[in-house]
Amino acid sequence: MSVYSSKTTNTSILKPFSSADRERIKTAALNKVRFITPKEKGIVESVRVALEEKNFHLIQEFTYFLREADLSDEEVVQIMKDARKIVHSLTPVFANLVEGLLSLNWKKYSPEAIQAYTEFSIDVMIAHSSYIHIGIAKLVLNWIPNDHESAEWLNGCPSERVKAELETVHNLLNRILTAVPMAFDVVIDTVATKFPYFKKPAHVTAGYLHNVLWLMDYKPVFEELLLQLVLQKLLILDVNAPRDEIEALKEETDDEDDKMEDEAIFQMDDVSAPPKPPQSLEHPVGQMLDICLMKLFKFLDDKCRPQPGCTDDQRVAKSRFFKTLVHIFDEVLLPSHNTHHVQFVIFYACSIRPAYTEIFLSALWQKVQNPNVSSIIRHAAVSYIASFLARAKFVPLSTITYYLKELSNWANTYINDSDEFSSKNCSLKANMVFFSVCQAMFYLIAFRARDLTINHKNLSLLNSLQLSRLAMCHFNPLRYCLPPVATAFAGVTRTHQLAYCHTVLERNARRKLATIYGHDKLMPEETLETFFPFDPYILPLSNKYIEPSYLVYRVHELEESAESVAVETMRRKRGDSEMIEDDEFILADKRQKLSELSKSQQFDKQFYYGASPGFNQ
Image (cartoon, rainbow, N blue to C red; front, top):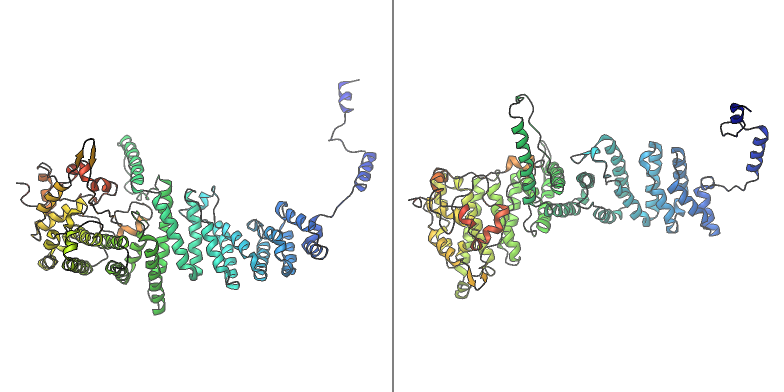
């Protein structure tokens, strides 16, 4: 037998069947027991059997079939049409079946199949309100981008493909909300529940926020509750993206860029090249916050800015929206201490119209004056007033002088009304609001010294504020102010002969010396714990909305002339009256060190009397 003939005698799956083998296979197929598939039975027959014979076996099989089978467009259209015919029979006992129908991945099907799915979804939620929770949850889940879809969401903006899919979702949601008013609360609860965790990728949270803002755009009835939810979620991001961590990572990145520039020092620069776009942050939560705030700023611009030729009703609607924003600010942001960037939402909104600034400042000032409001909230409101007036370019000088007068009148009235007992009880806790008001005045005068001392009229105004009386009163507010604020204020007032506070500062410095008990050291806790909410904004992408309206600190002219001399002079125990030129008036990451002045001597190295005449001699 040859080798070839021996190979061909073996059976092979590639060889054609003989007629006998083919007949044998047909006979075996005919003798098999066959069952009708769920698709052949259909949803109508399955529901009829369940209702009449109380047999849910076919319903279970059909539900499994929906979840596992790869349906064609025609099958989806037919199933949805059949389901619409019996929609009133789909009582809550068929909840699993309805959930399976609503869980279909409709995005991959044809427009006809998507339309059939949409019509069934609306009909089943109108007929049975118990399915509203399931239907809304399935729709909102489509808002959440997948972790690997970052290329589809550039800076929180969807691609054209994703935008088309989301448009279908929002159109369906809009129709449901119009037809079923009771879905309002369900939508609010579902949106809050499905909000992504803050450690998710940046495009996931930004994409979800995009859809939340989209919902508010076509359903303004959700504005207050959803905007409050958004600010609460952004507040969590802000807390988990501290300013010092962002700056530390930014410094590392800048150092690496400097090394690369040093290596390429001999390369020719392309003068015609466009300016480099702002770099994204290395801090993941900070980058997420940056993108989300950029989207929120754009949304606020559309909602608050009146367009040319708009009607009075439209202006009233935009003012109403801003008042809603101020109310949310009172509920969410004002009680939150030491936030970094979220509060710039109200800063940007106020920059759109001067009327918004008046509404915001008036609301804060009413809280400060109201004795029924807790001292912590009044203290925070004063901090917002001072920081806002100091940093906002769009605030006219007349508004600044008006609130300086109001603060001065309130503080002087407080001194006049203090009785013999209160004059002896000058503790920080008992007089927190008074000390906050005084510090706000000191901070504002020191920060806006250029504008407030530009002419004799403004100087006369400062003279009328009775600054000397405030600084020298028995409450001694300079004792509780942050050291940079107290020393800067003392330098400005001495320069312009408004008050002489350095004697008080030196006396207070001696009182802050530590007391040693053996190996223990007792430190007096006498510094007012405060923060200035509108300190420099360091998020690069969203900074384009803040920078045009933000005032960067400029050193006073007298301070500039004395700076070179003051570096070599003897430093005093209280510290410096000069503010740091690089917009570092109050360093966020050094406030704790400054508040613990008597714990270390670092304060002596950071501040010096460089602006006050007579101290360099």
